[in-house]
Length: 374
Image 1 (cartoon, helix red, strand yellow):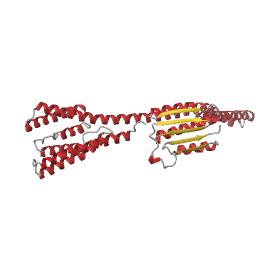
Image 2: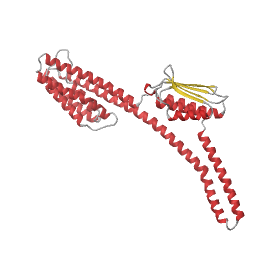
Image 3: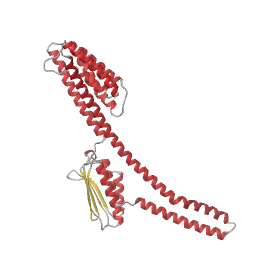
Image 4: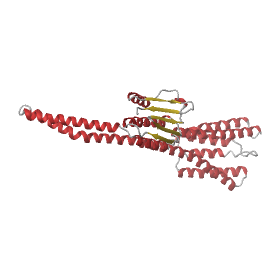
């Protein structure tokens, strides 16, 4: 099943939350080592930890603010930047052997700022920040500036690319999902317009003529009774013809073709990421039975698309019996009753003399079974 936007959002954000938690643990441990080795006093250690915790606590909120839509820099971003500056000012100006550089915390803040800023603004801020970091680290530690510049540039570029890529991936999934829903709504709207146009074409002329002839018959009723009677006879004839045309139109609207429905359902399921296998032997069924099965296929597919996480759906029709199996049964919904669509389908089949059932199987699948009179 194709990823849904809410699921993709949670996966990406929780993954980044875990990454930030790991980085926080790494640098808090590094700060602790500074204190344990006597590099910084306890008060400086406590203050540096407080600033770092403030930054790491704000970071998840920075991610969530910009995932759904672009936003200008918020006070949270400025507060996080202040926490980073406070932590860097308090941490010692030399590194312990075998430990990562603590300047990466500033690069991490830059990657969060990139979610709020344009590409040009991010580039300007990145050049300024990396330049300051390079000069500061080189001056304080005596390291060659070119090596520091290369390290910080690669680190910043990698983190910014990762942040923007994860957000782009979520928005792509969301837009694709919204486009599919919009396409479905458009199809429904077009069908409504078509039906309204058909009714107008069928009834517009007939009702206009009926109205005119009724008015004429009313005027003639006191002058020429025979002609008025003839006009009313035509009104009755036109009314009966209009009623028949409406019934034909409604019957045609309510009648589904089984083969067309199976093809449409397979295309819809596979477009949603569900592999669909269809096996049908229905040549001997009556048109009414095929229509009932077509309704069952449509409702079953709707149920799969809306209420399951299926990756496979098998549709078999044999001797007037339809079975639809899918592997996307949701635990939270396994004990709930059928929805309105399945309930209406059950009533339709029972009224026609068939039977209907839907529910979980012993193998963990969801099975919809519908039987119709042959």
